[in-house]
Length: 149
Image (cartoon, rainbow, N blue to C red):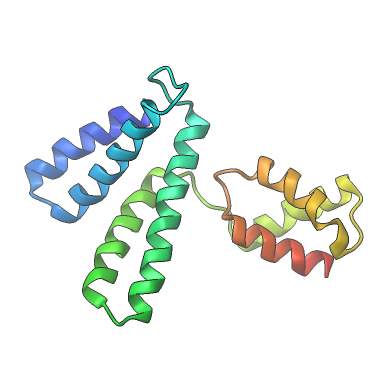
């Protein structure tokens, strides 16, 4: 089932349950899907990997906003961002924990032959492709720095 179909079904369920928090997050996802479908050069369909990138972008936006709202002591707005972030993360693939990430990155480092922090670009390029949707870019970068540094 495509992301768009499951989001539309979830919107109907949230409307019937009068769940405003879920409805707000689901509508944000639907809006992003519609924008992506009508973007230049698109044929009205979104590839599954593009759906994951779209959800990751939305989640990152929510995390960034959450940080700003917490810094400004705006708990009311921070709570809305937390609710939307939780909902968006439900549609993302399960994220790797640090131990799994470290294991995968060690094999990538061996595969590339990286020995120092100067080789970080090689490792990050391959790691970003292999771990797309499974781990956050900041987490990947932090683990690679720790392993190479």
